Length: 443
Image: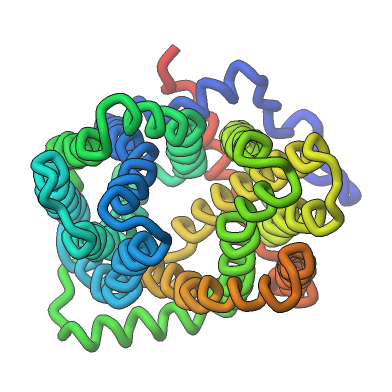
């Protein structure tokens, strides 16, 4: 399909057909017609139902054993440190081995760790170090699971369906998050933390069974180079893509600022300025609702100017922190938090599709691991610095600084032409493929 041009104008008789909303909906659901993707989607959804309630169970389990925040901080740190240390190893392994197999064993490790912790809690013999060991085991497994899962979508879904596939995963993940914390609180009150963590263990087991059924094409590139050579090759590939590392640097600033402002200081702000956990819970619900809305928007909309969408989408995350710093009414805070969630979901979905489009699949997991590591490394430092900074300057002052930093980091890459012009590939052939996928989608 080609355009005819007369005096620089498009020939309307040869114009591309407009895709209606009905066709867009069928196209959005098209990835679910791929059996391997259905297994992947269902496995992730099951696992997320456990992960949505597990943090509440874990927190109250630790507080039951040792009253105070010190033990919980130790358990949370124990989960993050192995993930940071092993991410690069996980990326190499996911590129070397069948990614579905890596996902299976990652889920099995989490099932074993959480299952044992649930038994210890049920017997009332658990100690904080037991839960820290469980958290460390799951963190290590996550370092292998995350790069593998990011590459599976590329292997099982045709390129024209990948944007929709990523959006569907985000919708599933964010939908589960809506009721997860509240449900977790009820389950802890009714049944106790052991049963909540036990449920999470069972979801890992079910996900492992489903992942074992995913059949990948045997056309994977088998690498014979050494492990260190693979790491170096992944780094060279990552560093050679200027657009990629610039945006990772952006994320390495925005992610810790957001986590410090929203996750760490947000509840403190809610307690001191909003009147308690109730109003802050509404703010969190607004953010989760925005995440769902953004994923739904990304499912129906495939923006071409990825650089602009990602930068402005992440820039919206400065709004809730700025509103808290200004001590505006809670209804305003809920609204801007929903906007931030929408922008974040759209930017994450479009960014994932671009990375999958531009990175060769035999190097995708390693590249993803370098990207994730770059954004996670500053987070522990941010957590450590936030408390003293809030004591010295005040909570609202730290929130104001975080908002300014996020806004500056989000928009700064747009000064670079390569980022402003960062776009997904749109060719006549890709449009033909999209129309074909619409025609073949379930009706």
